[in-house]
Amino acid sequence: MRPFHVLLSTLLAAIVAVPAAAQVQAEFAPFVGYRFGGELRDNSGRVFDLDAGVSFGGLVNLDLRRELGVEFLWSHQSSEIALQPLIQPGPFDVNVDQWMVGPWKAFGRPAARLRPVASFLLGISHFSTNVQEGESRDRFALGLGLGAKVFPGRRVGFRIDGRGVFTFTDAETRVFCSSTLNACPLQFEDDLLWQGEVSAAVVVVLGPLRRR
Image 1 (cartoon, rainbow, N blue to C red):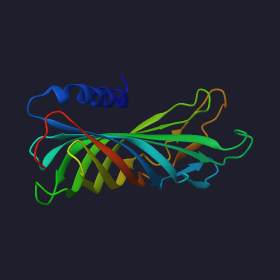
Image 2 (cartoon, helix red, strand yellow; image 1 turned 45 degrees about the vertical axis):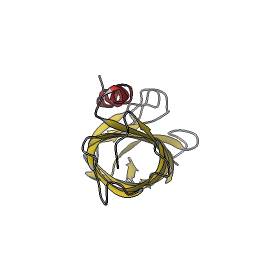
Image 3 (tube, one colour; image 1 turned 60 degrees about the vertical axis):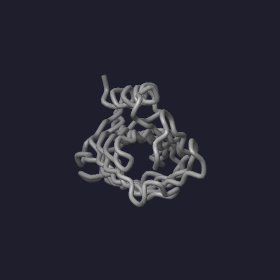
Image 4 (cartoon, rainbow, N blue to C red; image 1 turned 180 degrees about the vertical axis):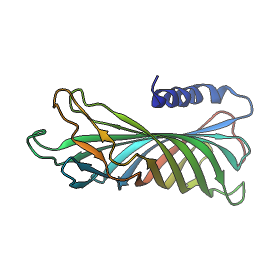
């Protein structure tokens, strides 16, 4: 089983099981964002930036001690790189999915409606392509996030976040090799691929309500 499948199973299990737990509150937050950064290069040495653009995904937060808990993250970006036509007509599709988990901490008064929040996440970045038979790559990643939550109501709120994700990529590792193309069109530029993301989410509180 691939690592991102394991993380997906864990995320889905949390969404289903946590509301039934007597003492644990959960927050489910689907989000839309904007992701930027990241470089790949082709076999001739030309460097390509992953096109910045819209991302989307979801967060699940488990509230263990009011100001401290566990966060699960999935974030998806579809991007394009304009390679030479002899490899593929038109842009070459590149998808980056990040599956991560780690602790979060809230700041300020527990009863405040607006609370800053920080997270430290570990997981994987999954690189794939829509090209037929193009293989994918999974790489270990570390994420740091800062944001804020506001709750005008008891069960529904809003959240904004800024995240930086650092993916350990092994420079010059070839990616998206395809028997159909008979080529490995791209490779990682450096040992560390950095991407940033800003996002906005609607937060739905599941399970028993706890005082924030």
